[in-house]
Length: 601
Image 1 (cartoon, rainbow, N blue to C red):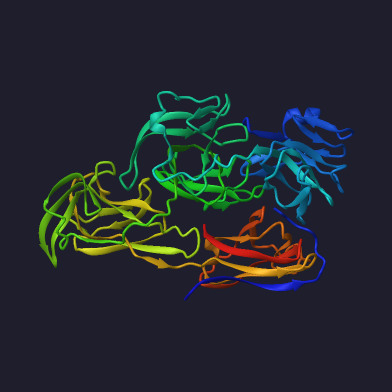
Image 2 (cartoon, one colour; image 1 turned 90 degrees about the vertical axis):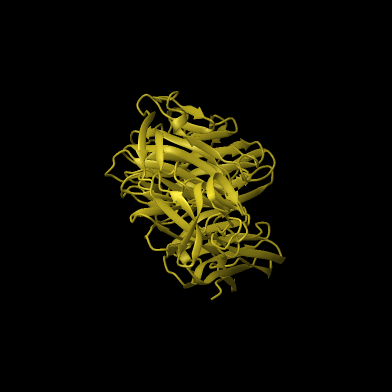
């Protein structure tokens, strides 16, 4: 059945509260928990601290909050009824600027707006703040002062960062490009790390009390992957040290090869951005204690494994740290998701005349790669030829390799590709592994001595997939045999994008219902696109705008610059219903367009 994203419209006449438009040399951070700020701040006269002007009547408060496993001890309260004339803070923006506000509503019962006003453009926008988190506003305009204030009741601020926007900084990588750090290469130089270190863009933050080290130690996964050098996160990461960061461009996948330092324990590796927020990525979220919520994490088991994170944001730095105890990180890679097609193809070794008998060290035949493989004659069932590969650890094992089309479906119709291989083995207990170019396990099968077909669904981007075999009992070099490989035919399995042109009248309010039919609702991030020069967001939720709790179950990731991104806390498959509604107020009279997109997490 076709899966649709649709939205309907209702004229909305009720008055509702206004809501949201949700370092380095090029970055300034004002940390209101820092001693420098606390020692200079005054609430009886205007204060200027490192270029940030703070009007009197702001209140410094020792209100502790924990977020992403980091404690924040001091917050700054904004005064009520602020404006560009009183009760504001301001800083000079050099032009296009990404502004990160780490803070919360002053009360846990109701979200509140922080207004951002540009002196250069004479325009303002609101950021709706609720729980303690990173709230980002993308200012795109000429240089000038940026004002922050609350025109109604106050909010609590822990830090503000202004970063000069550079469109090329996190531009998508091209095919063949990647960022990679293999700690096997750094052990001799960085045996003990007790100060900040930059390794080709990978930043390690350490001090005398919160140290890290690069160490050597042979390890082998249950699938035959071998590694030696690793970065030892020897304990809990804090705000001041024992964590690492690295840049992640747009449209990227991140691969982290890691394990717990203790073989019989699973330990969480925490993931956030540099502003203590969550990246727009398909990461697990969990509250590890009652004082914290929404920690992004990977569960690292006691044996080495490679974990994949798909990133859907506009580019930012990831921060990794251990929640509590030691974790060993062996390798980090950031690769682009390439939207490219490969020829849909079935390689039947028996009927394909390109495959002649012989040994092949590293050869491509009819676009099928053979590594340490043998093509040999056989007479089993209907097969007369097959590929024989040795069972070894991953680096030395025989392999067959082939390209597969982009099936990630980050826009429009979602595509599932079923890949199959027909194989058997000489020894029961042999594992057949399917991996991508970064060593990430896509599927595994226990081979039989009988010839069988093995299948798995592929939803990654354009890549090279390899099949190899590994015997779990030992590294015995028994043979396994491949008779046929199919790199998959795409099948539409998800929702399509939709948009609608509407006619609006200045000053009128309209409620739009964004619905989905026959969809696994929890598997997607949803994006609503609108023209911010034509429409102003007044409300997001399930109700009519009057119920402050009607956002329950909706997780708003972004709400600014003509874009609302959210997901919802439902796990239903084949679900139909309202994902959310939005009330807009028209800024002008005429036609405008609203779009609705689903992106796979």
